[in-house]
Image 1 (tube, each protein chain N blue to C red):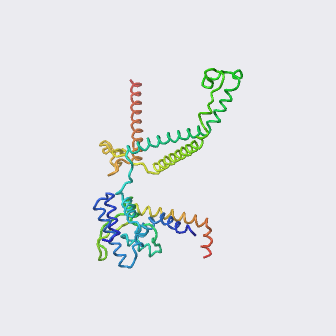
Image 2: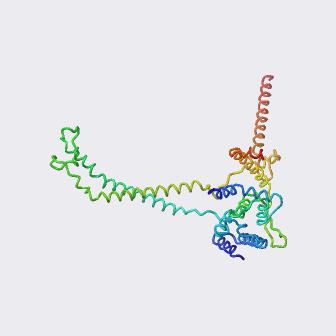
Image 3: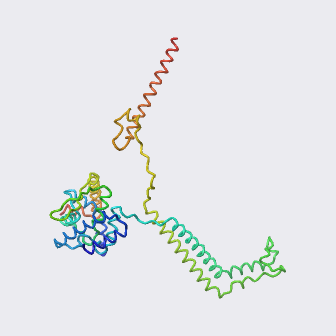
Length: 117
Length: 249
């Protein structure tokens, strides 16, 4: 389908901040580390927007706390950690995502398919 | 420093990002790209689409961190633009009017002439002197004022005028859309007034005063209403006591 690439971009744009909050919820992480964690969970951002502006926005909105610390043998890195506000935003965003996903699944008739599978 | 990071630094410098912040972002980016390279990961995988447009990438990162504000035209520029648009609209309207006059002027004037050529007795009111010659007998031949050779010119003027009006409307529409989509800025120096604790409130009810947020408003409302009730009750009690004293005396 011609619009599939554009749709993936649009979908990712809507939830990438949520995914970043989720991957830094486990442990504090720096930029590239978060890209790796996203990739390990099957979400590659190749061909999509960068995470850096998004991290900047999360920091500006107070959803993450930052701290410079030495990385494993490398130069000091800026580590991002969920703030209390960020944790609340992650919970609210996860609820929103689940509700949206369920509604779209119902419209697309995927609920029955899941049950059968 | 990689060429990508170098271009980002130039863009941040051009945008006026503070040097300390630019250094920090450049160092993070450089370290991430170096680590990715060591692991055999492409820069595109780290930077997404931003890899192909370093300037946009740098600008969006700086804007997301709040170092760059979208530029707004100065007030003088807005006034000049508004005047230019108004002048353009007037000129375009004049073109349309002239074009219409050149195109349809002859038939309209012929109708006037036919009306003017009718016997004056049929008219309830005498025709104004504009439509008759000084002798008052023959109508003036207005048809010669718009020769047929001007009709193509009229068409051109009409099209030009309509095009100009359309362009002006489109410009105004886009400006209105951009203004309505821009969030309003809070004016400097005009902050919302926050209810501050007074010395009396601190003394009478210190539990209502939060450490940094001033007074807890719902609690204050409850407290003030209770206080009012107590004061009213005391006043009523005193009134009754005075009444009792008056009766006994």
